[in-house]
Length: 513
Image 1 (cartoon, rainbow, N blue to C red):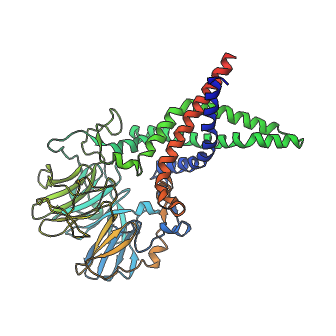
Image 2: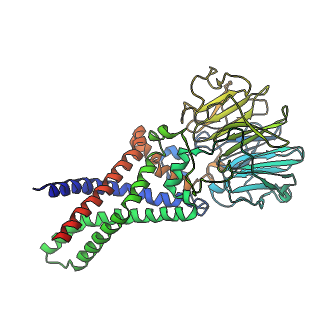
């Protein structure tokens, strides 16, 4: 056997059986990836949680159900988070929905912040816009705002002036409820600013195609459809020859089956050969968006790719995360993906704090004033007590001083998604897995009531994310699910490249013959 035939045999082994196995995984990767690429389009589609594995059901307010609360009066509290907005009493026992006006779908009721201005107007920062509450008819109404970035993350006010923050801009205007008009402000770059973006964000946008805007996303959608076709046509070519042989032995017609098999093989080879580089890049970038490979790139910064969606004139494009006003210093604490900054309330100038608390690459979830100028900072890295002027940071849950780099691990012992305060000052941390846990007291938080559980579904986007990242299969694989993405990525790359090399060998052989 000559070297060319040996190589072709090797390529066939690397392509055939691994390709058959991985094709079933690639089918769900492709379908869920397309759903994820168009979040707003599918935002009104939900899946009941009771149809999903147990870990996706709400239990003790876990899975990001709550982010915070707003105390209106001693016996009137508003809670908010992934379950929307609900009004309850001071004991957190009785709840009634305050979600009228939000569009249908869990994603449309994903609340990042709830704020009550000094004149009594209520504002909600949501996944797809900024809302004001119409007191007369008791419904939320979306404010018309000049921005292409719909995700709002924070609302603050000073006297009768309202400030709202989305992922890229600050908005400012006079607080007037549903009649509020806001001016878009592009924040200036801070001192010593470097035009860099996170490597994680760069790889994420390469993987989704968003790095080239809508055309890029549509091209990745096409790659998803091609992946579905390659998987199905590969399964056809694996199964049909045996089926055809069995039908021939039984003297049954095989004409249509043979035609389907030939057509499937022809276009399987052609599309795979034309797009193997793009497919390999798609699979390769996906490997780095989940641990363990995520850890290697989590806090790396790179210059934005020229002329891409990340190459923006706005230095804060898609970097703003939270905002909190500090009356004593008459300034804001601005949380960004580049760290925490002090922003003056007069000219909105920015200065990065020298001491930075640990914040996970997944972003900040808690930014709450504590006492004497200190703040509680919560993310998937944990919950920390941070004072901008003090060098020492404390783990608020253990009470011990924090020791480590201020970039923080992507995931800590507690994955903080929110923080609640009772009318008597009692605190409850909200952990993604464990739910509501008392802090420095022993009074458990009230369980989730049936009227919330019945309506708190999972959005199709979130379900797609859980499947796409492999977390959905934790009930079968345990902690080994974490290897599903990197291993399937490596196998997919091997299958695509070996398929191309096998096609090339056979194509040349036919041409020379």
